[in-house]
Image (cartoon, rainbow, N blue to C red; front, side, top):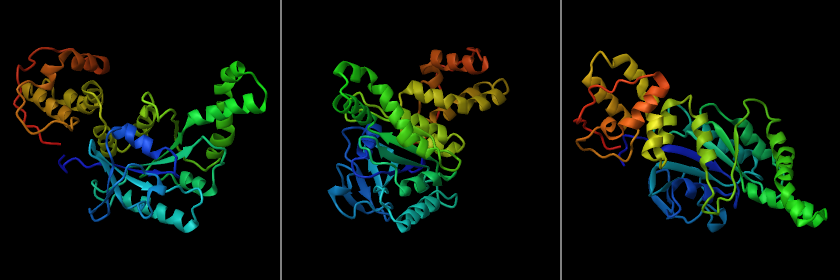
Length: 328
């Protein structure tokens, strides 16, 4: 991967067993083992988890965590802040402010923070966690990630069946509703007592299972980054999207150009449109393309253009396009 496309850089905060490892493995690939470098670029250790119990000194927030299969993501891990002192909270806040500053290069800038809060125990939110959630700086937006929601459902089931004497069938039937009520009363209402802006939140479950997904988290992160176009694009580029989904992100970015140029420059406009769309394809290496993206996926591209702007001109689509694509 070339350094011409900066990494999407995320700070992930959470105590041991908060589900941080599961989140990163889902996003970056289950088979990949994370690699850690210190702030000077020196390899520290290859970790199999982000559990603070695996070793002391590994959770320096300045350290950068990457995955071989998803090299355009860089993560910073902070140990759980549920018992953090004011000094530790201030140190973390300083890190966010410094790495989120516009004075920082795009390659080193922090783009978002995920605060992971597991729901499989009854521990209430601590004051330290509330302080971090309330920070929510505009430059580095926060997403509150409630993990192990399936654990909360299990607690709700046990509360009814074992403690309340409700039958197995009735407890299972009512489990989701009770879990929803507990979530709102014990967690959500506390968060939304904070001063605005209110951070968005997601709930994740079953991440230890193959069917578990972080799609809600990635979509929420895309949404909070929409006002920061470079960070938004980098986050999308870092993900392992299929071609069709990449095009759905790439084409709106090219539509303004298409509207202003097509019809004025003809073939050149289409070639430039291809170039612009291909900047959203980080897997493409430097080569001459014999068949353009428009020629390769005409039905998809023109159906999307028609849906957005009513464009339906299929004339003069090039049979080939000699576009030099830079290695992303």
